[in-house]
Image (cartoon, rainbow, N blue to C red; front, side):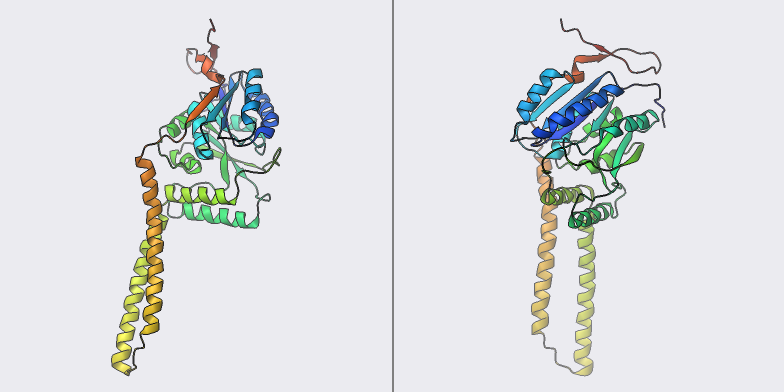
Length: 339
């Protein structure tokens, strides 16, 4: 691990937001205050994922008061994963922090994350202690998802680790080099690797309102994750096909033997009907799984961008240059002249 104890990095914080206007007024000042206590060079990038509330008006007012704020408004609702990608692409800090805009990620953990980075960690990710705020069904499905996505996969995705994390610049650059369209960020974080360490946290209550990411969105994201980072469904179909073939051959041998050795007449009708219905169901299921993979291949080959930005307000760290340094002193930035 490379120690960075003498370095004070520039910090970018990325917050995706969808209909979080009432929370941003509360959350952003708290985040900015904490970031400013950690470094003199910070930027806070808010990515508006096609919000239909007053997010634009709120952000315009906040950006007018704080030069550290950057507001990216996407042309429509692309989803949280593309919104995170847009923020990561725009971030210019030596370290990049990802947080949610609902106030559930405690800013009190940011100093500890930065300390872990200074001790040599390239990625510091937060792991939930519990899921008491979720229903029993969601908890069960979440546990099942991590078992499925990690089954037979060399790259293991940490269970209960979300997007709340700090990443070194080289990790961010590695993520930016991945151009796939069907993005599952939790899997991409794990795939790029680097020296990672976990810290526990308990999500705070939402500052206001209800979550915009319910059970339906969770299931959709889980499906994307499984298909993007695992071929377990295809292997399961192969194993199922082999097992059914062996079962069919065994049953056929038993029927023939029974007919010749015991003389019992083979009824046949019920067996044929049930067998046809069963194997038809297996075939349709197999075609459906294959179609999901083919559909994602189709999305990839079209090479459409994962997001489009319709508006940007604020410059953040874009108005700064790195000054040349000798050796490994603390990272220093100099302000560009506005003349």
